[in-house]
Image (cartoon, rainbow, N blue to C red; front, side):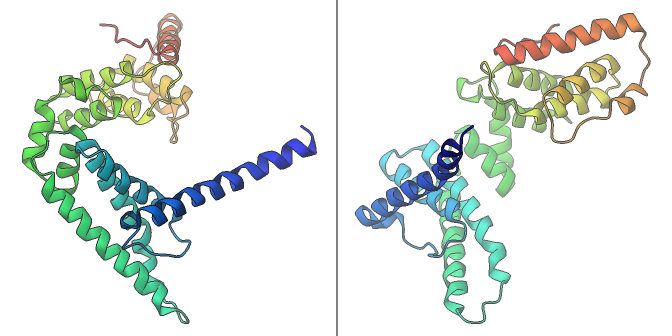
Length: 265
């Protein structure tokens, strides 16, 4: 790679960041209502930009999806700023006040959205109300909607499995396998789905599945690799069995990469 190409590659992120800032500046100049009640320095710039865009999206394309996206970005903005409030500024106290007011406004906005979406059946909002508000109604409704078209997303099936795992392990297992089957070709697989599946198999002492899925998990680069030696102490398999199970591992990996995964009964 020549020096000119290296220089251009290094310059590209800076150029894109500048362009993005220009676009946000234009949004704030043309529609200032999307940029009010925010802090002004360089802290949490990404979260602030995302919030401005989410506000505009909700205003221009109203609906449950936009409400949820705004709620997410508000929470991320709030969580980014809140730890900074403990910092003592010795020269510019207004910087701290600026962030404090932004955090308070974010909390108020989250509370308003929480109230206005309390009766929504949008799956991601139902999860929000269960996870952040402890709403049993939202939890029950989310589980009831399991087979609806809008629930056919890997992250939602993963969440469904987590809710079902203690009360109906078979249904939880089905949801996890279904989550994997929903991925398209060359998609980035959420390896937590496989980790949850492996945890279920360990708990139920299904050691052949433990052998297979621990290797699938490691091959997909899970952030916490499984100790295969530790997995092997649960049960001993002869060479022929291991060869057959290794073929299962390779078949699963091939199917996941091709977006054609299906669970073998």
